[in-house]
Length: 464
Image (cartoon, rainbow, N blue to C red):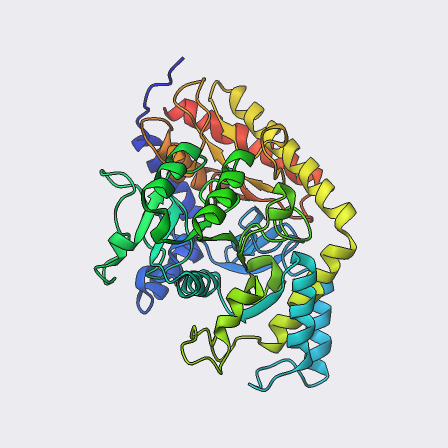
């Protein structure tokens, strides 16, 4: 059965009008912000129509905005807050350090840097760790290291995959009329289009063809084990092929674990696939809510950063690399997750599966076909990242983020525009359809989400 395309003009008009009444102070705040900030924000992922609400406080599974709304939150700090917003274990460690007169930037090496790095190396089974401040910088430096180590220039990545806003990754992120073979930003070197090769996610045959064609020129293949654009995990076959092909052709295999690192287990997802990459990038969760990221992996590759080398990789980080409070928050978080791994991750996986099933059933009860990603029985890395999409055919299951964004396969407007605002009006904040479950989300929260889905579905039917 095929679902016909719906006209959502009326529904969106009704939703936006109600949203502007419920979030009136945020509207005024957004207007003030736009006077100085481009689009009123400093990160485009935080922007949506008609405007984003403004947070006033956050704790556990909830965010409180300046209009007095209490929202169940699945954005969770860009998926960084696995324990929920402002967990006591981290907050108390930071407060204690500040009260004792330490924690702010000194620019002088501290013991915390080695302690944090040793902890991360042990958790991930890595030989070397190099710290920086963002996922974008971590993936950029990992690709630079790969190009320096191999003496090659070509970078292979997956269509729809996001590895940060830098010239070595900004191709094939967004679908255009010509597919994913376009550079995503102006202002980049002309070589960007030629030096980045885009391949479909979970398509082993296409990946093999690329390596057979230009394998001796490929520096690296960079891959998110679970794609951030919809949370579809890599198949075991695709992950295994990526590891085998890079090794055979002398390229490096980079796992971008900025989102997935410590999300499925107290390590990298590569552990669950039984695949060891050459390099991995980590961020988000490893900072415990503070800004820190890392490139980890093989010593012979990362040692190209050494200062005494005549031709070294200039991976110098920045002023706030290894910031004391970030390292304290990060080590506190990693230690906590490792100590409680046997309790936290099974509980997250079980509750996430309950969320997937309940959301699908809520929409099905209103004759709306909805599917969640990451079901336990369909992926190696089943866990707490949950995407949602609306297929146009009942026999269609999205295999990649770009399929979820294809209007010929899925109802993109329903998910990306109507659902976002409709769920906010039911006091639920979603991203990518749903988002990241935290350890703070309860069964009662899930019940409220199911009720919100039902209320939204009824509005879709009434205004469709």
